[in-house]
Image (tube, rainbow, N blue to C red; front, top):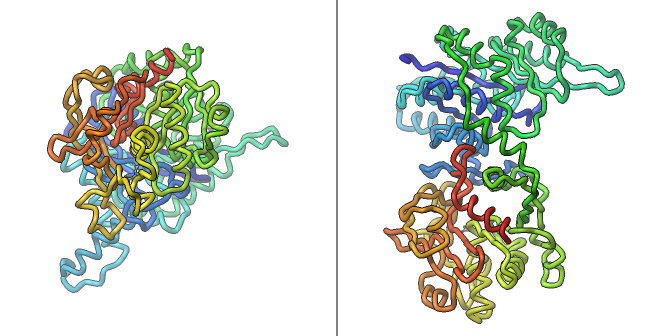
Length: 533
Ligand code: GLN
């Protein structure tokens, strides 16, 4: 296509309006027209990455193939577009400042006073343009975290102002706002939107497309009014009304010609509307799936929707491809005991033992893995979940009393999950785990192989502790097989009990690589087993 085009997605009025879904949907529509598209997110906080943030602060920490701990919106980008993102797709204020300060220490600024403008804004602009110039994307969509009006977003908005000025119609701004419905007055209110657009204008940025989030349909007169007050063309005022699944949003955007408006504004040929056949087929199967499959998620963040985002999405994709409607039952692991486990898991078809850190709630996970093992309920242990399967098996089958992960008990007599050698000297918490994609070789004689139909796979990791190979023979002889290993380090990546219907634990996180059009084979096979139970 030649020169890269840049689309900035900003938000106003309130947070959590779904900028990530809007960015992904726009990306999806442009990609369906044959363009090479990527999406990046700028987060205006000082942490270098969200790896050190707890899930209450930031929801799930997503991991890219190149081992970057990233914002969960990158998960949406990958699931919608079936692309792989990298470290360059998620930048925080912390990283921008760190890079500028490192340059200052090296003396790169040749005696100049280092300031927010131009040095911080130049670093932001460099990171925005980097994806386009280095990887030759046709479109780079840049989502700016937070809302217009936040002090911490100012350098980003100033960078957008400069880039729009420099690039002319090769850059545009999509601004997402909220239109509340006042029940007492029975009216939709556009004033917050008008204020938010004005705030943006006061920073020198004119929105080119307005996306109005609302719980109700907006009539033509509302759009007309917003267009008039906000200097936006009428057809570029688009509504985003709640839909049953986020995966319908691209179609809603297409109905309102969002992709065509973008192409028109950027002076690109418009051509035919893409059919999006596989996408629509997926949605159709999802809408038609009425029979249910119930999966319990055993974890300690059950009250937090976003903490297990990628697992939920992977399960729901796999349910759709098995023509089932997914019902999730959240089970707080801290509350589980041998006495209440049967009641807590009553009626579930399968359970996922969630990833996690620290000892809170871990004993409950041992209770759950024991119960599902003894009652042959399909069980999927992910990362800490897999480690719990191993610990429980050691205690109750290998009779290794007090067996544990050294993360939970440094003095355990049986360290069946141990700290990796190279982790022992690590003192910094940020970005120092075993992170990113590693190869794994699968034993062809396993359920896991039946699912993958492949011997060599690559999956993403985020952990410090490992299955201890000193105990491997004992496990194998007693029926828990190590069916996936890293070819270089011989680390155990997958365990399974072949005697059971589906009892599999993975040290890696398969949920990071399941997408709408390429659902993950392990999730597909797990849901199938849950249905057949
Ligand atoms: N806490 C465990 C470890 O660090 C598991 C991590 C996880 O579940 N992501 O090894």
